[in-house]
Picture 1 (cartoon, one colour):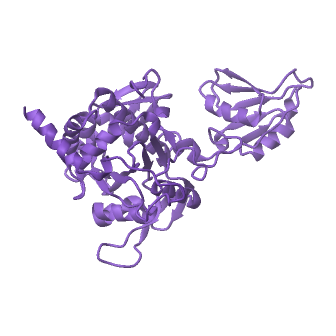
Picture 2 (cartoon, rainbow, N blue to C red; picture 1 turned 180 degrees about the horizontal axis):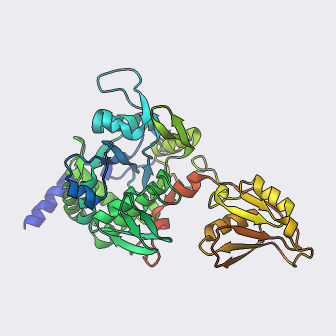
Picture 3 (tube, rainbow, N blue to C red; picture 1 turned 30 degrees about the vertical axis):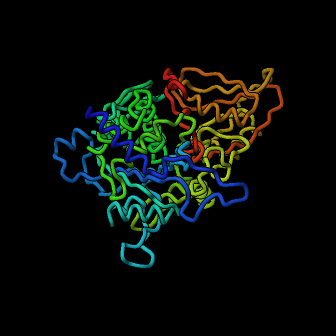
Length: 443
């Protein structure tokens, strides 16, 4: 009886929500968005703070050293007005932006890394800074810290992640082997915080965070934890033990958000990272920062404001003619033909010309790319530049890829490597599934 009464109370509360009701699409010719935008925007942040942690807790959580009292994770979640799509955009912590002016003041605020807005004005300034930088209104705000994150993951049943190579980061405590792993809150924290991996930096880290979030949401859906408002209420109660909200976000809001997410198939949940133009923009007194790509990031925010999908939008991420999966500048190549060596070097590969030792009689057929086992992705990038080349792996200690030119004419194509495409392109959650984990029924 108590559960029935609680359920009726929840349903009564939800019935008052205009954003859970049916919405009609704008008629042809009408503007795609109002000034305030359409849909609902939720800012989720994780705080890097050691305040109140004992020495033992710091060791257990692998968070030694001084905290910055800033946002370590920042995700903007957009729920479409018809509640049939969710778009999750990660905002890298080192994004260089202008802070919003302190409340009650006018004029421009200082410039710095976006994660520093929290230190200057806590959650309210972080929200206003995101609103100023994106042009979007934030409707709800959720915040947690290291221990809160750990507890939230444990309360929600853990996190399943997978990797095609071992991941080890001594500073975050991450140490997992190739394959699929179910992580508790402590290990999930290490996974979410790891930055000292290959390639290093924030974009790979936020992509892992997106994968983990997508996996957790799918697991909650499979278990039925978001299947109806009553079950969503139980999940929201658990979340509120470890997450703080702003005064505009109550229990019913969390229930509605969870219920919405629980009804979305994976191909209706999008993940992306803000497009970057400069990955090491040095600012005196600030250090290395990230500059947003002006036109692409504007297209991203415009799409969310207009309530449009962000996947497949070439204004956000143009599709190159010949895409490189990995960075050619990090790929060492030996080519036994001078013309091919010069052309590959022009495309950005680190090339050594070995034509002086090439055989006088070329073997029949196309070029052969020989590569060390484990360098399949780099081999694919090199093969994109040499269409028709044959690939051959072998066990050897060095990391150099060899190109042996045959008797067939060789065409060398210019490849385009875009870190935004490789590490933060808009994708749907079904792309993140671990091997052997089938889609939920009805997905």
